Length: 390
Image (cartoon, rainbow, N blue to C red):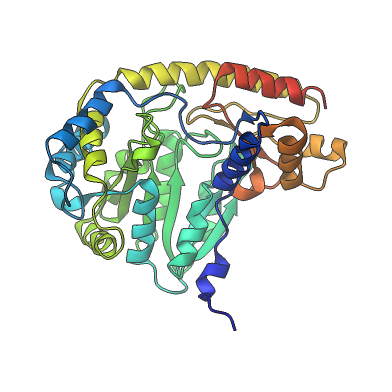
């Protein structure tokens, strides 16, 4: 007798977390692993943020908060949207969750009915399709590739919209590719979406501040304000402030949708951690120099890894423009080594070369792998040295 719900069988384990777990297991056995898989900054959370958290503990901020976050943090989020993005929201249009992942999960649970379609450009962040599936949705994966800079075209978007389409997902800067949509590209996608008013849009801006493209950040709502009644913005403090473990994300969108997401959260996790919220308040309203420090380091590492990988026979590594990932095509190297696919290649790298990376298949892009350069230059250099021996 099967005791598990059918929905469990639809969902894949997180490939990125699986790689990290396997690498940690090997490290616990005394084996040195070059960590190129983890998607989190290798910087410590800034001291002012740490102090805000300890002060919150000492001041007794250890009790339940409002389900959708403290008033102080929500006001800081409103100020952030106004100052950084020239977007105005009301308190009823924002909420705080336990990480950006929960924002997306809440949204899917709040808006998707069985059979509703969710358009997801590939390569995609690994959890998008599975969270849609858990809500009864149907992921519609639209393949892009290196030749089109890993970005969906307006023609592809139009071709994949149907009467069942409920949500379109856009992530810029992108995990896993580091691709960034220009204002012109966002306007072209918006022109398509305007003809399909039943389609909601979620813009995942979690890597907003981690860019070296030389342009001002823009999302689809900033370039097309008329979409405000259909657009949800996802963001958080994990990446920009080296706060991955603090688990604070936030969303902004139409009040009716945010209210429904709040209801979902109220019957699942309830409020995010009160202490982490106090830390996030300091992150958003305090000293911002950590961002420039990290971006400079990531930019330098990016240049180094792209040059190094492109010197290896069988690897094609495009430039990234944000986040902290390189997403090279390794099909030539896989063939040269006589391996089956990118999954087998990633296993080979971990077991033979002691390099932890994530197969492109996890992101809907077979034949690629994701290298995270949110690690030291020493580790990056070691990884390239090992791969150069192949």
